[in-house]
Image 1 (tube, rainbow, N blue to C red):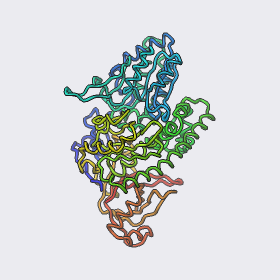
Image 2: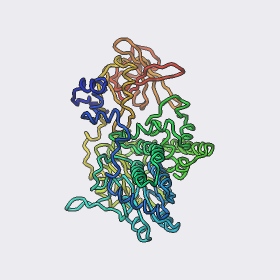
Image 3: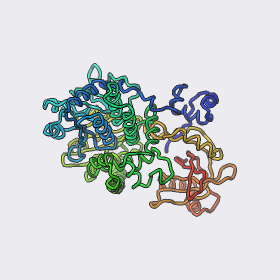
Image 4: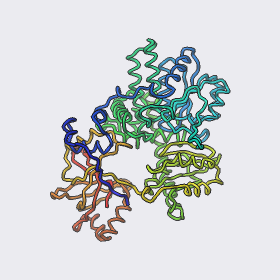
Length: 598
C-alpha cells in the first residue's frame, strides 16, 4: 500500500496569489513543484520561447556550428544518424531539415533495432564511408560510441556528436574518469565541463539548439533571411516538444515552456505527417474541439512513432514526418497505428507472462527484478519493464533472447540510479547505456542468472525506498470543486514528469455505487456523495481487482456486491483525486478522477 504525504512546503500563499492574480490554492500547488521566487513563478506561469537558454552555453556548440558552416560552404556530404525511438526520429527530422534549409547536402540513417541495435555502429559507419559521406552527425546517441567514432575517424570522416545521455565513465582511486569519444565536436548537457543551466533536455531539443545556433550565425552573415529562419524554427520546435514528452523528460524550467509552446503549434500544425497521424487516431483538434495535451502525445501519437522502430523500421516514422502528400501521409500514419495496435497486444501477453514468472518463483522477494523472457520481442522489453515497475514499485530489468545473445531494458524508481548501479558491474554487459531512470543492455545468455544475483547483492535499497509515495497537494473535500477551480488549474498545464497533475484528498468519502466501464472493463464509474449531500461522478482507471479486493477485505463481499448493484448504504474510502470537466453529447459537467484509495 502506498504511503500518503501532504505537502507541507511553506510560503506566503496569499501574497503570491495577490501578486500573480491567482488563488492561494494555485500558489500552494506551484510551491509544491519547488517553483520559488518571483522570477521562477513568472517564468512558470508566463514563460515564452524567448527565455530558452542560449545554445552557446552548451559545450561544443560553437565548434560544431563552425564545422557545419564550413562543410556547407564546401558542399560536403553530411549524414545525420539518429535512433529508432520517438526522440531519435524527431531529432533526425530536426537536424536533416535544418541542415538542408541551411544549404547542406544532407541525408539521414536510422539504425534498425534488430539488425543494428542502438545508436551508431560499425555497419552504419562503413555504409557512410562507402557512400562518400564526409561528415557524420549523431543525434540522441553517440556519446558512448567511442570505438565506432574512432573507426569513422580512421576512414577520414568528420564526426559531430549531439546527445543527451550519461557520459560513460570508469571509477578510479581519484574519482570518475570519463570516457569521451574522439569526435571533432561533442554536444551533450551531461558533459562534466558543460555549464548549461538545465541538464534534463532530450536529444531532439539538443538538435534544435544546434540548428537554432547555426541558423542564427548564418543570419548574422546575411546567408539566411531572418523571417524564413523564424518560420523554420517554429516548425522544428513542435518536434522538440513532441520528443520531450515521449522521452519522459521533466516538464520543468525550459522544457515546460517548450512543451506548452509546442502543443500550441501542434494544434495548428502545418506538418502533413503529424496532421495525418492525429487524424487517423481521432484526436485532430479541429475535429474534436479538444485541446491537444501531453497525454495525447505521450500515450497516443508517440507510441505510433515508437511502434515503427519496435516492430518494423523507424524509417517509416521519419518518412511520415517528411511526407508532403496528404494521401500518402494518411496511409503511412494508418500503418503506424496498426503497428502500435499489434504492439499493444504483444505487450499485454508478455506482461502477463512476466507477472506469472515473478509471482510463482522466489524472484518476487528480490529488490531488483530481473525477468528473462526469451520468446518476447526485444522491442517491447522497455514497455514491459515500465509496467512491472508500476505494479511492484521496484527497479526492473526485462531481458529477451535474440540472434546475437540477450538484450534488455531497465526501468527504475526515483531512489535507484540504474545506470550507476549497472556501471558497478559492467563486466556482465557487452554493451550498455542509459541514465538514472532507464537503460538498455546486451549480454550473453549464460550471464543472466549471475547478473540477477549480483545486481541484487550490491543493491542498497531499503523497504522505505521501495514504498510508493503519494504526494497530496491540498487536503480538500470534493464539495469545494468548482468550474472556476478546474479552469484555474489548467494554467498549470502541461502536466507530466516533474509537473504532475495537482491532486487533492478527502477522508471518508461515501461511495454509493460503482459500474464497470470500457470495452475491456478497465474503468469504474462511481457515484459518491459529499458532505453536503451532493452526488458526483468519480472515475477510476486503476486495477479493478485491487479495488475489489480492498473493498472486500474492509467491508465484505456482500458490501462489494451491493456497491455494484447500487444497493445498501454504501461504503466509505479515503481518496486522492483530481477534478476535471467532462463534455458528452453537448452536456458539460464536473467530474472527479480517483487516483488512490485507502
